[in-house]
Length: 400
Image (cartoon, rainbow, N blue to C red; front, side):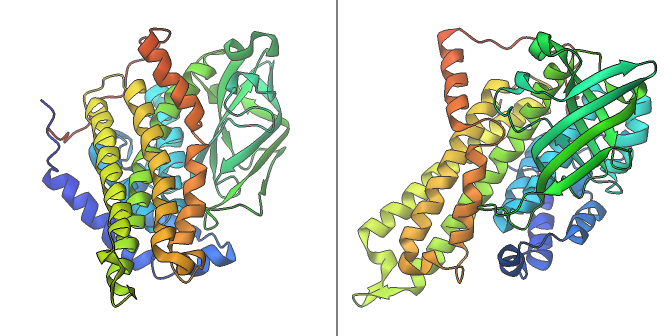
C-alpha cells in the first residue's frame, strides 16, 4: 500500500530545509542572481547540516535519508533558488549515489565518505560540445597505458565545474564501439592536465557555477575506474535516473514558489476597486498552477516510494521529471501574467523563476526525449531490464 502521509522524519527534513533557506539563501538571492555570484560557503553549510550526504548510507558518512525526504529537501531548496537544488543533483544524485551503487569499498572510503560529510564537493561530467542527449557520441578518449589511463577531450555544461574537488567523468576506450566503449572514471581536481572554465551569459541559474572541463593527457590510475571497461554507459544511465528524480522534485519547489508569489500578489494588487484575486481569469491561473503542482508532487513521491523499496523506477521517474518540469515552466509563465508588468522586473522573484525553470526541460533528458521514453513503454518497444549491479538499498525510514 502506498501512503503519502509525511512521516515525522519527512516533516523534520522539510522544516530544517525551509529554515536554512530562510536564513541563508532568501535574504541574498536577488543580489547573487543579479551579480552572477556563486557562494561556496553556502554549500559548505549545506554540508554541515548533512544535506550533501542526505540519502547516502550512514556507513559511508551520510544520513541514510529516505527518498521521499530527499525529494522534500530538493523541493525546499529549489523553492529558494534552483542553484542550490542543482548541488543536490550533481553532488549527491549523479555522483555520490552512483559511487555508492557501483564503487568498491576502497573507492567509497576514498571518495564517497568525504563527499557525504560535505568535506569535498563533487560533480558529474558526461555532456560534451557534440554529445548531449546522444551520450553514446562522446569523443573524450581514455587510452590504457600499463596501470594508468590517459584521458583527452573536453566536457561542457558541467555544474560545479570550477568548484568541484571530485569528478565522475566518462570517456571512451573505443569510439567504434559507441556506448559499449564508454568507461567511468573518478577524477580529482589536482590531476595534471585537468583545467576548467566558467560559462558566462546564462539565461538562468546565475547563482550557480556551470562550466567546461578540458583534459590534456590526464593520467588516471586504473584503480580510479568505476566499474569495468565498457560499463560506463550503463553506469551513466543509472546515475541519470537519480539525477532526474532530484530535478523533478526541484521543479515542484519552483512551481510552488511561483504559486506562493502569485497568491501573495493577487491579494495585494488592486484593480477596478478590488483584489485581482477576485477576477475569475486570475483565479483560473492560480487553480491550474495548484492542480499541476499536486499532480507533480504525487508523481515524484511515487517514484520515491519505489526507490525506498529498491525497485526499478526508470519509467516512473521519467514521467515525474517530464510532467513536473513542463509544469514548472508553465507556472512561471502564468506567475508573470498574474504580476503583469511587475512580473517583467526583478523587483519581484517570478522573472527569476521563469529564467531558472527553462533549464530543467533540457537537462537530464529533454521533454521531447521523455515523451519518446513514455511512448516506447506504452508500445512495448522499451522495457526495464535488471541492471548489472544490485539496486541501491532501501532507505532507513521509508514512508508508507
